[in-house]
Image (cartoon, rainbow, N blue to C red; front, side, top):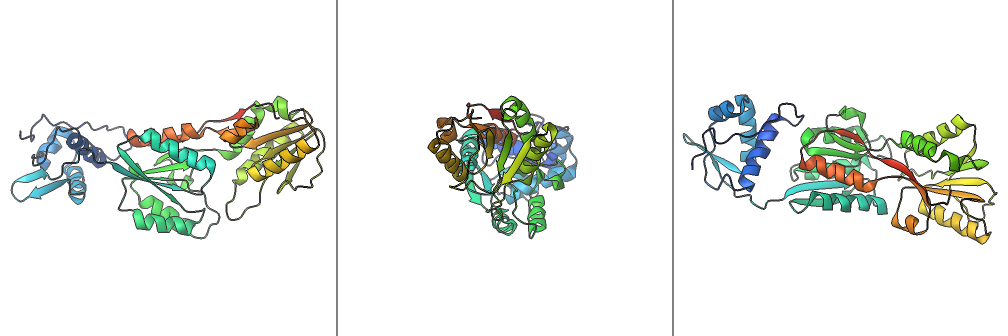
Length: 346
């Protein structure tokens, strides 16, 4: 069957932010994958495709050129374009780039892989907050993947400009920013992010009754230069304390010999500090949620098991949202869900 007719009508969404040539590329690939186009079958000519879709000829040429570069179609002189590759079962390749390895980052990755399903191959890479390492990863892999998912947290400004420049070289419909919003992209790429400062303020407001029963709030904020935590967390904490006139203290870590004072509440980020604090609370037979308040940042299965209250984003929702944007070719900017989970330790 020669399909250079109106029987072939790819669906082009003129309201979508996905480039029209890319929509056409994806449509043709989908029809090959579903068996509607078979190996050796002829495509409509550029003129015919333009009439069928209403797209400019330059747009059709750009789509066909990309399909030829992928060796999915071939051009035969004086005859036209033909399907050159049977891609049924072909998996789209996704490079998932984490800023660091941690239990909750791996939870996001695993949930993302599960949400995408079997038609995608997801490879993992880590750049350890270093813009230079991220640049190296991108340069090495720019031509090898269909999609890139990146958590753009950096520990310094040196090399950041080059890393962002490389991220901008990725077609907008192939890049997903996760966890952190970058204003340099002006909402032109898919993004699922945390508003770290606002999230802290709103979740502390949600738990206002619990926080305000203590005399003093103590934030344990690690001063790490290698793997820095967002300063917005500290700003959100200070804003809440200022709004309610609460006495507060910010410390670097919970030392093993720290003197605990009744009616203090601790907000802890690192698990090592949480463990040290729990040892001392239990050693002095204080009651969590009454004598000493404890709330931790970012939920884990262990914190749930230990019945520790948390302020946490929903990592599964973040992963599912990113996967959905890839599957449905959505370019949206979405703030992820963040909440206080009360387990009576605060």
